[in-house]
Amino acid sequence: MSKLYEIRANYDRDTIVVYQAYSSQIADPALKQQKFVAPFSFQRMTWIKPSFLWLMHRSNWGQKSGQTRILAVRITRAGWEKALSLGVLTSPEKQVYASGKEWEQEFKTAPVHIQWDTERSPRGAALPCFSIQVGLSRHIIQEYVDEWIVEIEDLTPVVRKLNEIRRGSSKSLKRFLPPEKMYPVNAEWGRNLLIF
Image (cartoon, rainbow, N blue to C red):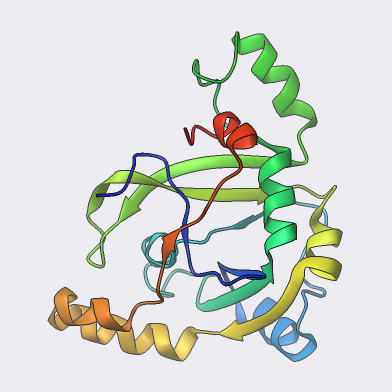
């Protein structure tokens, strides 16, 4: 059984896979250049998610407008861990912040926002644990694009096939899903992210 707050991800010694959903206008040039380029916005927050099923729930398996292309973005673990170390939660959790004012001051200037959302099953049911979303502000997006990204892969055809399988049996779907295991977290910033 997973802990309530735990990062589960597909990762190896040096890299971790995060998922993003975009329109073809953003996805096609990103795949060609193997980095995000215009019309991708460097001025607004971009959210990266290591949970495949959570993004499937959010994008309705790549069927929502503007989220029809599912990208697997392999980034360096060094970049991912830098984001986590700079992250401030999107709500003033009492286990982390002495007061709402303390949280507000930190949140206003944080280059990275951390949000926990209910994890999902293949059929979209809520699970009794949370999935992490990492929001990269305009102050760090350029570094994400230029230094962290190792590879961008188009998962859209795979997602369409998986959605067809899902309509039949979510049990048979599980063996086709990307492998995700618990990601080790530094104790110091883990406490700041509710991972104890």
